Image 1 (spheres, rainbow, N blue to C red):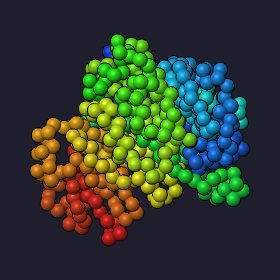
Image 2 (tube, rainbow, N blue to C red):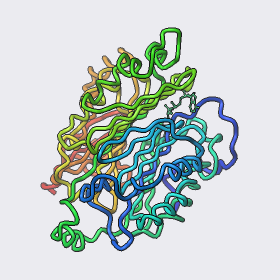
Image 3 (spheres, rainbow, N blue to C red):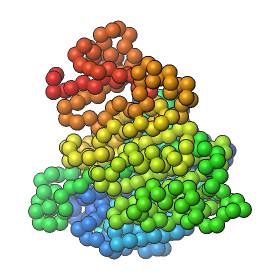
Length: 450
Ligand SMILES: C[S@@+](CC[C@H](N)C(=O)[O-])C[C@H]1O[C@@H](n2cnc3c(N)ncnc32)[C@H](O)[C@@H]1O
């Protein structure tokens, strides 16, 4: 049964069901990822739906262009460009992007689009191909202009109810949660549903050669606001505009993942989108440069465990120098806690930024998501913080290893106890160290000792 919506969700975004004209462009994307399996199979694929056991044009890639046009039209956007390789198809949309793998579809739309309205049509088209959905993940940040969102995006509650109607019967049912402390911006809204993955059936399928051994899929999503004005100007079609490729190169976007092939698009009079394709991995950048509601997003999905995530986040920050940004890191189809490679280490120092909040959550299926928000701080704040010993490195591992338990709490009122967010009191003499970071106090406890 789906959990109650009575707690844990920012009530300020509930109850808004009307669509009002937005005072600016809503950059924050809604992102839907749906996994499919042949209708006869009960399980999701372990490789995140990339479908390597049947590469080339198969599964969802057999959807016709007419079907894809109709799909994005229901969501109220259009396809403006396409780039394909032997593993998947990447489409730039008038509002963000669409990625089609044999057994996975990722659609990301912004503005006042109605992304979730495309779900029934997507499931119908997949059924025509003999595919059924076996999992779904929906994520988005806090909208800047929530009152302008159409149904079913009027509130997170509405979105959860809509998703539950289509995916709530999968496995243990849909799970939802909101990451990010109250008061931080943005918060991260997550809905996740997946069919029961039976290890026995999967291993049988592996033995028969239907499935490759499970490989987790890593996804990094960055959302940035309050972009540096000078840098944002590059994404206007001014008198010196040549073409989108030149913008991609001059802005440093071409260097983010140098091995990828890029499909870039400049909007009129401003705005920029690109998709990057590299084997089975993809990346995407979307930019709203207008002052007052400037926004940029960066996503990479399907890169391997050796990827230096911190270095890439650093490069993205150099392109936009945002006043605030968030990082969400998701590991799907993760067997146990091992094998996250560099996706499981703490983020490195981002000079000039303080970490405001860090949260993580496990999915029922064994995957997990970590979410961090950062804020540009003045040099005085940097200095003051360094004097008091607080580092601007998030000192916490994104994902603790087996022996470590990370506990978040409020500033200890007593010298010997940390009050945790679960109203539990942890005796701090039991474990060390206790660190202050961003707005919270953290206890890193060696679970092996307890
Ligand atoms: C490129 S799209 C990118 C969406 C992405 N989620 C973001 O906000 O960065 C949005 C930008 O393109 C501009 N734009 C111009 N024409 C547009 C159109 N037909 N549809 C959507 N955006 C358009 C918007 O004003 C905005 O600056």
